[in-house]
Length: 171
Image (cartoon, rainbow, N blue to C red):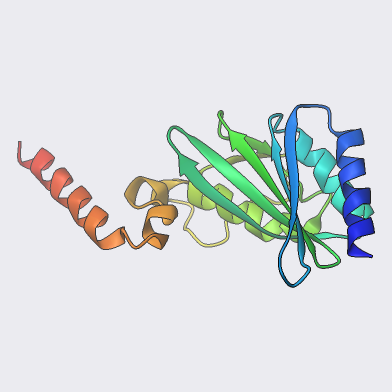
């Protein structure tokens, strides 16, 4: 049954997406299926969200991280236990909100907007979740990117950054 669902979802993706993309699927030793999709047209995330909705799926979470001079988002979407992971690179720091299609994306979109300063186009309620309005959006990325902290580099890198700033102030 999951194999049939996978084939239907892949078929819809191939039929509905306007831009270029890469797609692959994998199955682990327990039979869990994942689809991996890399979009080259960021607007195609709206088509993918609609496909997920049409199959009764939801947004589980969206991972955001910085690579070189731009951000990458990875949407982790679920359809009846099958994960659809969608990568989108943001070269202008803007992305269309999928919350109007999948309300389950609301919190996580607002979180990456607040933490990384990524502009959400068309989000119905872009209010902050955690940080006071007086703090600049994306400020945390200036101090310690979460991806570095999660890799255990926080203590060393943070100390080096503090020392560097201190020496700049002294000169």
